[in-house]
Image 1 (tube, rainbow, N blue to C red):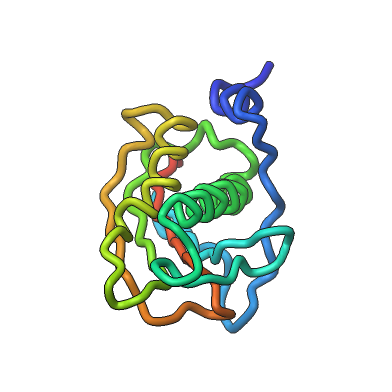
Image 2: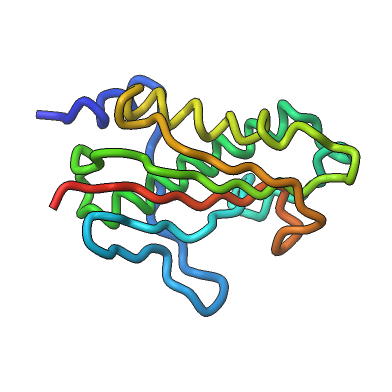
Length: 156
């Protein structure tokens, strides 16, 4: 029998990816107590860094799509952290989003909605609603357009 979260993912046509190999000296996630800290994930397109700068080479809608793609990758890592059972997630606690943008770009919060909205849709309003920070930055590793990290509370 499938879990409600697995059914939601299936209905959205989402297959969660395997955990990516870290590109530097860090681990994909750390659990301490009932909190899981997921390292920052950069936007990828066709398996490569999704390169771009919001306000110069990308629109807000394109950035929102990149943030949504990151949310899928984050859920893949979170699934690995909880042994494949996303039903163990009690709450998405917080997202922190970095948006590679021009000095004039003021819509980092709208870009980040791509991730926030998907997490709410998958986990439901009570579990998926989260605190959040969204920052515009001058650059992200590998020229990626967006990077997001996640903190989740899980059942013991």
